[in-house]
Length: 207
Image (cartoon, rainbow, N blue to C red; front, side, top):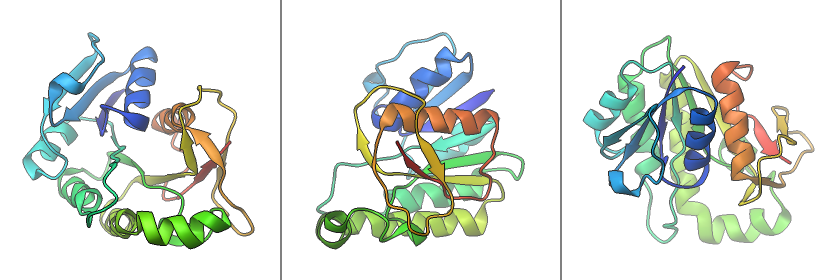
C-alpha cells in the first residue's frame, strides 16, 4: 500500500515508518528538514515541508491510500495551532476514498477525564492544556470534514518495545488509560492501515 506519514522523524511516526517499510509498503514522509529523517530505504520517499503548509500537505496526500498524521510537539508553553492546521489542510486535500488515521491522545474530545486522577486534575490543565485545546479542534475538523477517518488516542507513551499486547477500546465508560509504547501504537496504526476495523471511531489504546 501507499502510506503517507506526517510527523515521521520521531516518536510514533518514526516507529510507524520503520514498521511500514519492514512490512513492504511504499512510504512517503513529510519533513521540515529532510536530513532529520534517519531512515534510508528504497521504498521511502521524503517530501520537504511543513504540515501547516497547504501545498506541502497537498503534495504528500496525492496518490496515497492512507494518510497517517502522527504529529507531536515538545512545546507545552505556547498556544498551539499545528494540529488543527494540519487537519484543516488534510481535509482540503484528501479524497473521499482515502483514509486518514490521526493520533491525538487520551484526554482529547470525549476521552477527557479517562486518565489518572493526577493527570486529569493537575498535569492536563496546568501543562498540556494548550496542546489539547488544539487537539480538540483537530478532532472536530476531522470528524466534520473527512469521510473516512480513525482517531487514535493512546495513553501515556513510553519507549518500550513492540509487543502487540494492547487493547483498543471504543467504549470508555468506566475505563481509564494506562501506559503504552510508541512502537505498539505504531503497530496498531499499521493494523488499521491494512484492515480498518475502527472507521469513524476513536479507540483508546492501553497495554
